[in-house]
Amino acid sequence: MARLTAGLRARAYLRQVQARGGFGAVLRRGDETAGDILLKVRPVGAPARVDVYAQATLADGQRGWMRLGQPGFADEAAADAAIARAVTRDPDIWVLELEPDEAGFPLDEPLVLDQCDRGGQAERP
Image (cartoon, rainbow, N blue to C red; front, side, top):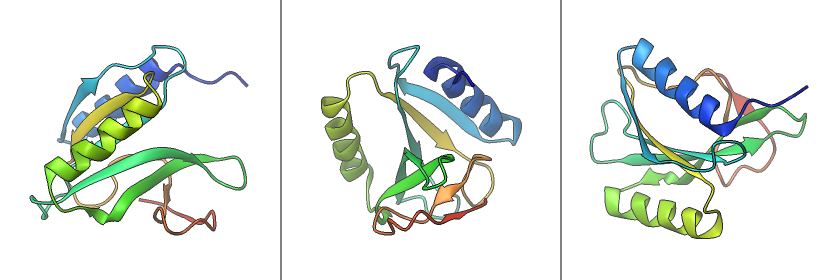
């Protein structure tokens, strides 16, 4: 089965968050066809913390998201530094900023438990 392009997926993620009353914006446009996507998320109820999520593939081949940092980044500067390192490694990467209107992971795709948990487990939002 053909995969959706990165640009189409990025726009769909933004619409998904906005349809639920949240805010979403493109911080960096990557390759329209094949770029990966990073999410910079400001969790509801934790305004000082910034979570960064990278796309991950689970053991069964299903795609999901993995949170970087433990349990997120304490401030925006640390999150931005992690994003800058990712962009240096992959200049085709997209970066989306999401401010969901409700607690929990803002997308319908599964969330891999955390970067330190490499067991391939996932939780649903």
